[in-house]
Amino acid sequence: MNCKEAVQEISSYLDESLDEDLKRTLKAHLKCCHHCQVIFDTTRKTVELYCDGKLFPLPDEVRSRLHAALRKKCQPPSR
Ligand SMILES: [Zn+2]
Image (cartoon, rainbow, N blue to C red; front, side):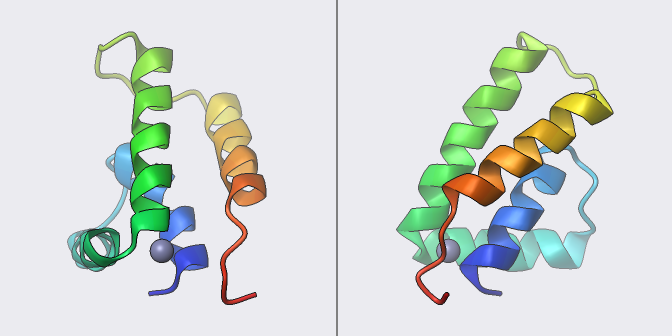
């Protein structure tokens, strides 16, 4: 998994819509990639703010805005 893929999966992961295999792959990437760890932390905090600490799915609109923001934010070094 490269950084671009990892960033794409992060919001799905936080949304609990990622399958176990991808979760494992993403976690492994986060362990060894500081860049994506930071994005993961930031995104998680953003999601927590949106949800006010309660567990409910992100509205589609919010999720797509989040995806767009992440894509802008992450300029993978591989590009
Ligand atoms: Zn990465």
